[in-house]
Length: 303
Image (cartoon, rainbow, N blue to C red; front, side):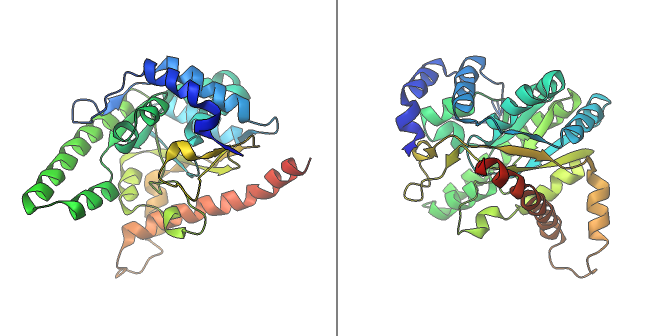
């Protein structure tokens, strides 16, 4: 097994030369359109490593979701997160396994991405800019920055920066909704690390997305062409790359506000954290869907 850096290092060098994305994020550049040149290279990586059994599950659900968005509904995709190729693999499969409708949906997807993808490393930035995204200052990143701040003034300045960036991101998302684009969010906010269940827990702030959008599909992922290197979990280019079958499955279309309302009605009036409970419910739904599809993936892998 080899890392993505070892296998595709020369391609990342090419992508870095093609890169146009900002290395520092502020309120003026939170919406970042896909770079078609780097996307071609990313799709080459996906194509090289996606085994023939890979496919989209719940095609009829993706189609119904697309129709709802085209009719004027504001659409949200909440998706599991195992690797940095989750988004490119999803859009590649939509385009290659669902024809014109799949491409239409793929072209509308705008991912919510943390600042780290732009600011940490030029190669990672080139990787990320292959797909349209709205960049945010994640709560986890702010907590770390405030914890390492050398003074109260420095911590306050960082909090102000986060607030300014995230306000701009909210405005950008609102425009995306009006323009018929679809927002994709990884509700865990990070890639799942085996043995660390906290990395698969949904973030409390995801509750606000259910209030902001009309309809959603929950997308589970079975199989991945990348595996996090346990010895270098923070080095995204150290991820182990090998061909795999992948199944991306969509739930039926869900009315966001009704879903939230119905679940809240099951909680006691004095529940200590209803917002976290709602997103825990979302993650439970995703886990069940994942578990239901897993035997199909194992059958593919046994052939």
